[in-house]
Length: 132
Image (cartoon, rainbow, N blue to C red):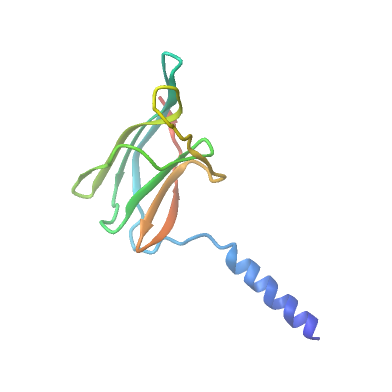
């Protein structure tokens, strides 16, 4: 009987830990435009060019990373805030022979999307990018 109680508790904790992070605020960001494409520069640099335009992004939400093609890019141009609209226009470098001590982006198993940070917790928001 104790074994069944222990197994029940373990299964409950396992299911609880597998839950998605729920968006903590009332409004979800609305993606107006999401485009990406490959770019290369003289065989020395390779990566993705990205354009994202969103509405209803709360002021508390800080954009921490962009996930494209199973890679997490934490270094990118600062977003442009205009009222409740946010634009990200950037090039995400995957390989570089020109940047000294270049570290490639970390692998990430999630689909394409954006990582937000709100009150110290990270939240992932999936995006379907159109090819440019």
